[in-house]
Amino acid sequence: MTKTVTTTSTTEIVLPGRVEPDGLVVRSRELDAPEKGQVVLRMEATGVSFAEQQMRLGKYYDQPPFPFVPGYDVVGRVTAVGPGVDASLVGDRFAAVTKTGAWASHLLVDAVDLMPVAEGVDAAAVESVLVNGITAWQMLHRLARVPAGGTVVVLGANGGVGSTLVQLACHAGITVIGTASARHHATLRAMGAAPVDYQEESMYARIRELAPGGVDAVFDHVGGAGVEQSWQLLRKGGTLVSYGSAATKDDEGDSRLPVLKLFARLAAWNSLPNGRSAHFYNFWAGRRRCHASWHRRMSEDLTQLLRLIADGHLTPQIAARIPLGDAAAALALAESRTTTGKIIILPDA
Image (cartoon, rainbow, N blue to C red):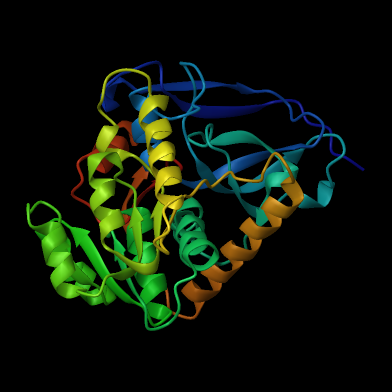
């Protein structure tokens, strides 16, 4: 029998418009009772991704209109269910990908989007590999399919996705060249990667020195003019995986234009008879067409990542743990580009 629910108090972080991080607004309100197919999730961990940094500037490809609550993914515990949802879920832990809305103490989530999380697993560790880890796993193993013994380049290897990619590739017997500022090189070496300073003009020349025969894959979240250089690093049969356009984050004008230009460039390269391929990784690809299949892949890949953590083969890279009420500081820290891994937002004490 479905449990009857009235309302739940929630604290949310609102992005009111194009503001600096300190312009985020903390709001408390009564959360509506869950509708058919929904649950109320009490947040145990969420985090800051590059998407929120783009959304702050109104530059994320399909963000909602201002004002809205950011938060791309969440780990939490069900506190109430709506009609049509099994009441036994109350008290269980789950992860979910929300795109927006997760920077809140309590939020409504569609039950079909829940992915089970075992008791005893650190919520921050799960959060660190939720979107970031699934993205890294799918780009490496489902899209590029780099074999053991291959060589890859990871741009921004100190970031949330990048640091996970480095570890997954090294665990799979793949040689990794990772770009980052010099302050992160010791960390990258400890993970097993050969670091290259992205602030040096000779970055691409240095990568060619390390891999004179070309590389099997380049994972590029930067986009912009530099994506041409990433393409040129590939050997015959190599794969360029683009998954962002960080270089154009601060550009004025239509936020869709840089992405559309990137799509056109990748398509043009794929038409060339040179044995190389170029792809844009879209986390949401296939969700509308077949949600069940998309959700099954997400759950399978998250399970693989959590198993690697449990076995000690993947170390969650957590840059900081910051309370929800200090989300502005969390966002500012993420944008400082001084950290390794993901910044986790936790419930207020």
